Length: 369
Picture 1 (cartoon, rainbow, N blue to C red):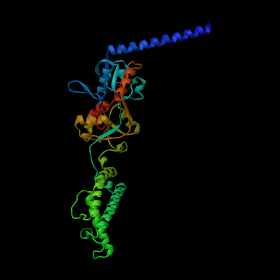
Picture 2 (picture 1 turned 45 degrees about the vertical axis):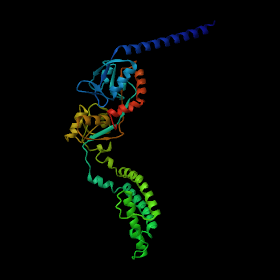
Picture 3 (picture 1 turned 90 degrees about the vertical axis):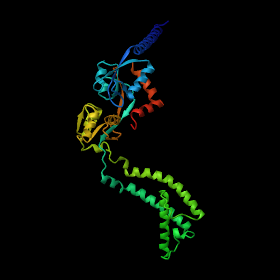
Picture 4 (picture 1 turned 30 degrees about the horizontal axis):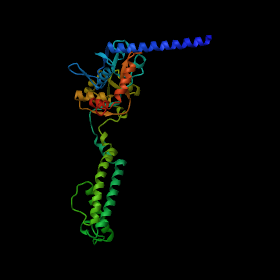
């Protein structure tokens, strides 16, 4: 046997031994994690983690962790954490912390699991509607274009009905010549048809005009069915064209300019506002910021949409929350560096958040998120 063959055989045996040792250590770590009592740090942050008056914890992140612990047979104790949870994880005070907002700065000291929720920027303010803004929506080109299209359609349907009914139903739709000249008689008859098509489309149905011929009644029935579907789609089109659904809401981030704003100190929202050059006041928590808006001390509180909506509900401040797609942040779990919990927790997050019941859980705590 050559020396080269002996060297290759020795390297192969060493590789197999090292792999077996690593697998044994991983298995031992997983076993120890399942056997020992984990310290789970909780940062109170609605709707992901909320503490009741009795001391119990609920929320999207809390329920997710309970399912992860059940799947992996973890025993654990909850530990309430101050701040954002990063320091407690980095210092080894807890084995895992939730909910944590992933940041580039935090990634230097802790490891994150895959995110289980993405929150975007929102603003909460007192609902107010400007009459001038309402008037402007009804003179916009989008609204006028819809009005012109509806008018043209009603004229076409009215003219068809006049052409069918003008001889046998002259008293309601007008003959070709009503003694005022042929042209004026035609216009008068088409006008009657236009009136009939309008009241039929809107289902008002005054009953002052009705077709009498068989063909006219057939066209009328067809127009009624078409008008039912048309009215529904037109309503949505008019609302979208006039932006009525957004009146009284802030359009972010542009409408934040020139307003007195508030944000939670140390949050990703505060960092975003600073980076964009928006002046703002800082508050210890979102509840304090919303109360400041309700008391007219600031004009809007800025933060993640789910947090704004949940706090607005719990504080009963009755503010209007305006969502946006700006400044998306990932909500996740934080772990100490090289924690053996990371892989099994990631696998569980992937399995649980792709299940149909995940949507129900999120809707329960954060409807319209």
